[in-house]
Length: 73
Image 1 (cartoon, rainbow, N blue to C red):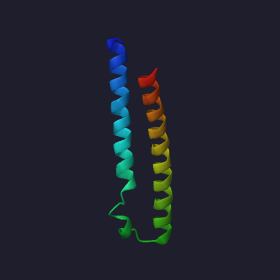
Image 2 (spheres, rainbow, N blue to C red):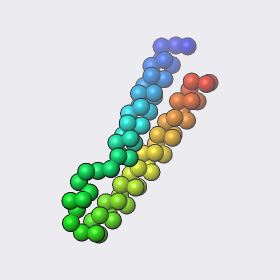
Image 3 (cartoon, rainbow, N blue to C red):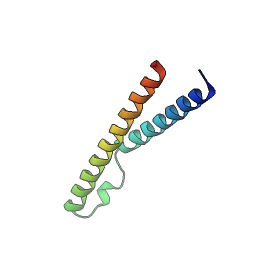
């Protein structure tokens, strides 16, 4: 195990933790949603938020797969 391998593993792990924290933040309800004026605005916000959560969840899944691969290989 070299220093380069160790630094790469730590860097990937910290990136994964950061992505998971972003996902946790996105899963919590936003306090200002009730302030949106129109139903169309609320629907658009909900659709955009759902797409963002799916994208970040896929990123987290990919990073977790990479972490497992690096640690086991």
